[in-house]
Image 1 (cartoon, rainbow, N blue to C red):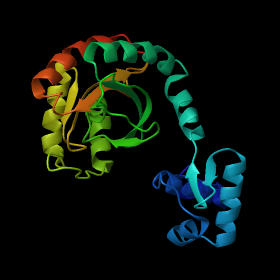
Image 2 (image 1 turned 60 degrees about the horizontal axis):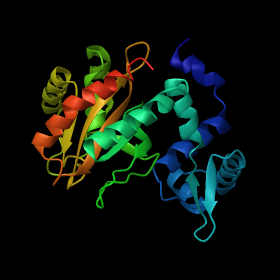
Image 3 (image 1 turned 30 degrees about the horizontal axis):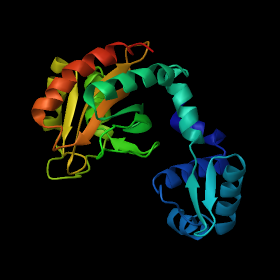
Image 4 (image 1 turned 60 degrees about the vertical axis):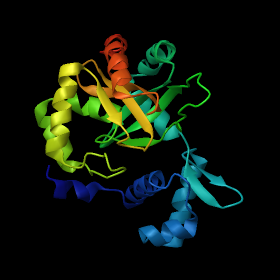
Length: 254
């Protein structure tokens, strides 16, 4: 069946509902009904019905004072169940705790979702100054340690396809925005077993991460250590990276 033939069976209201979900996901601080209607070009009545339905189903919630609608974490829960069959998070939590104790920095778990990653769990550092990340937040693949680790774990053909469809947003002066330069880092990641990010996603913050493969040996998630660049200098990132490989090995195939 061709793509054109498939469109004959599309349900317009369902398609609009998915568009609204994707729209709200790109506005984590929330949007009002009128803002959504204007930005999407949908009739106000249509937007109202769609969001009211999503709210009843628990996918969106409204902030009373601002009248802005935001996504809940229900979609994240569904995505996690699909990504790991409900076992990855359970197995990763003690690993993240042990990795936190080993590095004395915040450790995180994220899953691969299309052309970006999504944070699903973290174990905070005991340091007085630490990194704390919002659960459910997205991160780019080209500018983060977990993202580069998952890209490096992909077979060549899927990787090339992924790179062509990605947006190389420049977050800091150190962000890699050229595919050829990124490929060099990915090759280094394959050799070392871990990826690093030194002020590439956010000024003053560095990370080191490793990919987790599913039962079919495809990258589905990553764990990583993150903290202030003043503590995670290149030498320390390398030392933690070597230990990180041991932790990721215990989660492969989950």
